[in-house]
Length: 366
Image 1 (spheres, rainbow, N blue to C red):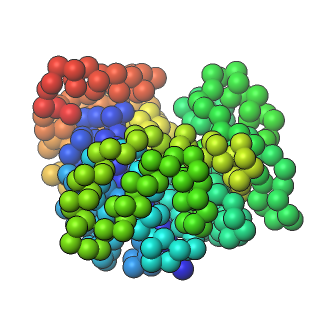
Image 2 (image 1 turned 90 degrees about the vertical axis):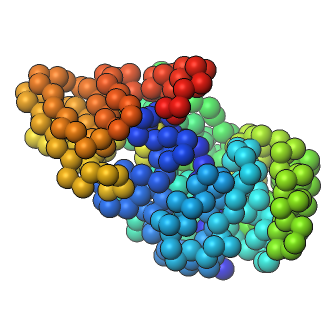
């Protein structure tokens, strides 16, 4: 059996004021369809895992929304983390719980807030990665780069493993400057790191134990109490003591250095939907390059937007008001009931800085 694990956390600060701490981006409809990012993730994993073997790891504040959006998912398959401890604790919790039920099960971890255009190609890539995982490698799906991107991490490919599509990962590299990203893409030996992981749970937990013994011990203690009356007590005692670290830093980088990480190429229209400029590039545009991101989960069923002599403008109408613009170009306009954002598209990444400033002031708008 293949277990699909979906970490659903974070607040998507670059998509503020649409994405908020209480209603983050994975709960929004940003796919060009009526499905939220979370629902679309579960849908495309349906060819690999049924609801009984699909787990979502999320925070206390989002449990009700996740359950509402995924009515076929068993309640017990929503794993609740009391507070954010980064991706290794979230993914490791699911792996530890699965291991007690099926010690050598295959497991895949897929973020809740990514966009995939070609589901069939995605499923094919994951199935190819399963072969490497069954052989004992910690597998990734490396995204074939389409351009030099400085906002993603990269995987440097080593030698091929056997006659199939699997290659060893020689190194995880962090977000590079532009000229380095150009050299990566031109070399043909690098993939984007999309944080899609496939492995046998026993292999992953073995590496976690080797590299992060404190985190491993805490997660196994929680997992052993998960189905019993002591769950809340143990979870409350242990969770807050776990190291806060990503799975890339905690396990994958060290495992790659030891030759234990493999990858398969993925070319299926992947995007991590990081900011509004990106949405303007990937969603359907009108003849002047404008994008209106309509509400499928908000109060407005037919938002009113009027753009006159405007080009390449991204509009997110969520307040119920008419949003109008005249003679503007390359702008982002996000209108919500309590906050309005206007910024140039080439400053979309800086929305995070604005949100950081709001946090420091202690406002209620985040």
